[in-house]
Length: 116
Image 1 (cartoon, rainbow, N blue to C red):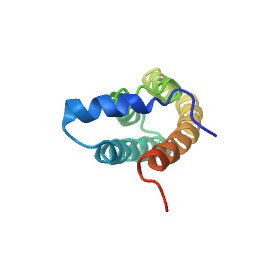
Image 2 (image 1 turned 45 degrees about the vertical axis):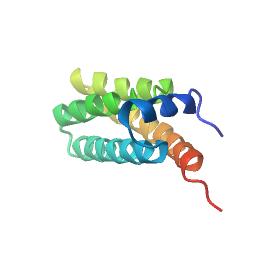
Image 3 (image 1 turned 135 degrees about the vertical axis):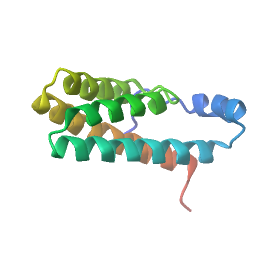
Image 4 (image 1 turned 90 degrees about the vertical axis):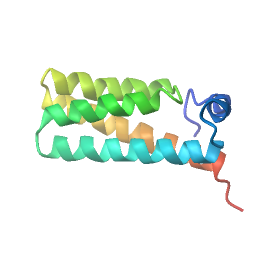
């Protein structure tokens, strides 16, 4: 199922701005977001909210490059809950984030790294 809000034309605009091809931009964003989500998960598993909030904020900066609203909403949810502090809320938001990111990541890869 396609992710609501993914606009591949935004990646083409970034291609010109960054001087990288779309596949390289996707690879960079996937790496940055994967790393941030690992840091969020590790921090939340340890019950350490400040690093989770920082990682969510950093991920939002990367996610803004593709401007997919569901992903941005989920990242804001993690960051806000972590800053309250609300560990259970941050963990709930992180589960939504993981689901959103899994779908978006697959869609990005399929669009820029076709198989076959």
